[in-house]
Length: 144
Image 1: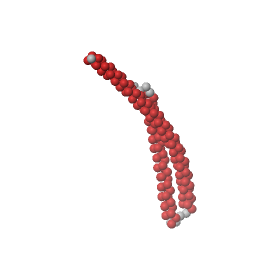
Image 2: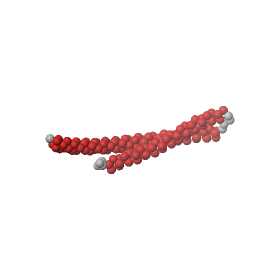
Image 3: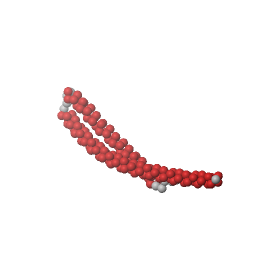
Image 4: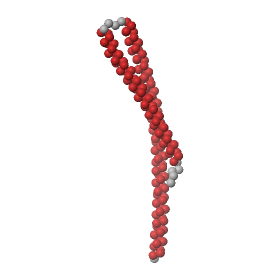
């Protein structure tokens, strides 16, 4: 017996798989951006250690300007990374909600398929029982 909405079930499952892949891509991109933000933070920490060491040595105004420019650029990049991560989180959450909806629709179709299959089995059992009753009745009439 073939489920009458088999094509629709396959379409919903395929859509769910596609959404899972898209969510995976978004989360991989998020991880890359998170790694980049961590790199910026580590670089900033390392540079702070280096500048503290150089401050103990002879330093000139050019060195101070260079470090000031570096820290401003690092601060701007860090803010940009936060913004990028925020946008990625928004996209990931929207995709996750879309995936949940697709999963629910797919599950509904699977439940309908199971119900249809159970109804078909019950119908076959009734037919088989009726035939067995008829055979038993005929056998009883023959023996009487």
